Image (cartoon, rainbow, N blue to C red; front, side, top):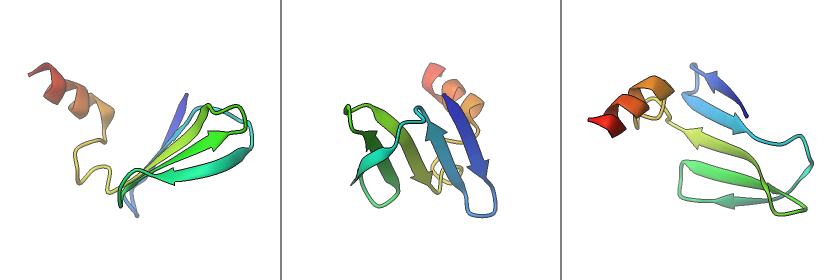
Length: 66
């Protein structure tokens, strides 16, 4: 898994596969999941990631542990 954060837009991209994306599904206004032909998750894009507390990941882990 690779992740990329775009601070100017507050977008976090979690990349799981290099296979081509064949389907994208919106999980709400700010989360989109992309799938490969085999049904595996290729990528998850999260808008307003820092604003909703999902970036940086270390802060998210601390919130879960507390």
